[in-house]
Image (cartoon, rainbow, N blue to C red; front, side):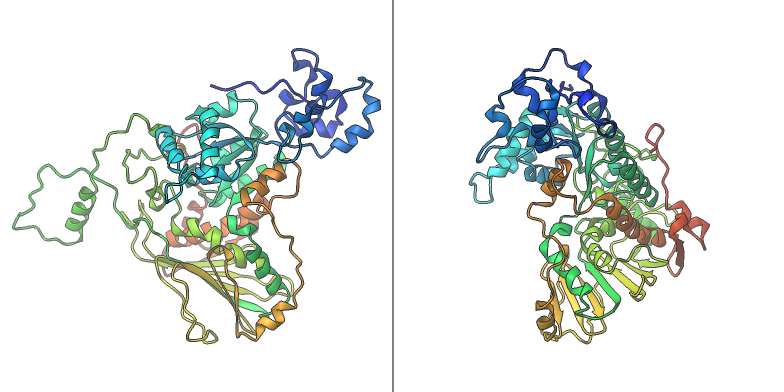
Length: 548
């Protein structure tokens, strides 16, 4: 199903050794070009057949040194130079989407100016339906972005196995990954090892160990990386950073972060068959928890056949446990199940913890303690996450910045109102962050939106703070795509996203270790120092053939 790339390659002899090392040989070896390149295609050859202009050779460099090429005069066609409203092929990135039925489809629409050459999903029937759904607005009028995405999806090569896609389709330059959490790392690792730029939806990984692996791969491969926490590219996020750095609220020692997630069911038992000998009206039925659990599990039903259009084996991917198909997992509610997701903390931590983590330069915590409502399933091997969780993190001093205690609340739980907050100001039930500073409060909503200062007298101080963080003009997705093409830098690369993800996941490690117990963490050695059991939750067991 793969497609050969256009016959435009870098002329290998024209690049310095370090330049050749950056590109897969299939794109730089002149010997692989079947026939001599026409002069009119030479600029396309130099500028990467479908994507980024290399750092080592720019258009200006090429023009200024064209006499050295001794290849004669050439005429540059309009399709290369482009014009007003025209994007030249050499300025277009060849992108593959892995996981397009959910948020991946939203991400793809933001990449409408790029060339989506492949779409990989275990359920293309769902993807096709969602693609069609996105072609219209709520009032039935056409959606330009959705219509463009429909065209791209129709023309893209289709795959169900990302490994086949990476092996067969040679024109892919970048991969956007929006699958369930449990497959993020294996797909991203394979793509980076194949030399592809990668964009991975949040949370970056399923385990702490996987976050460390992806960070190292990003460093060693040199590809452009980005995690899909779009608030990180917002102007408001940068404003928060500038206010904190300028000392508008003074030193910060305490932060509260909350969300209304999960908006899906958690605390559930694994779906189970209805007992054949079950008698609903049995006089000796006790309806103690064991009996209720049996009815609860049976009430979810467990006899769903795998739809023909779903590749359930590929959906399971690295999961070592033999989990039977159920529509409660696919396509949406997987996030609350331990085999596939990392709960509300993984879902929203990247949108909320992100901002204090960034503004306060928090790095790694030294201790973590967590408490929650009951897990779903056996306490020693739960199958779904609790409905509500509280996590307490302690971060050490960073230079002149004091230690910080960060508190996380989910499941509708919220922090106590700080006394400095005016009585007529309500905390946003959907989610938010409060920085508690020596001079006052900084509060914002999810994604860093709508930052506010209390007391209001601090607003005058904030107005004097100069802009020190460059604003991002494009969407989070296009920021990444442009960086892949050598224009600017990605705002949330794995060098930042992996440690942030590790902090989020350490909250779950503490929760699995046991309530009423604080784990002490040695980040340098990626090890919990006061509980061997806790270290088991830093890693995972992989199904044979799926290990990183």
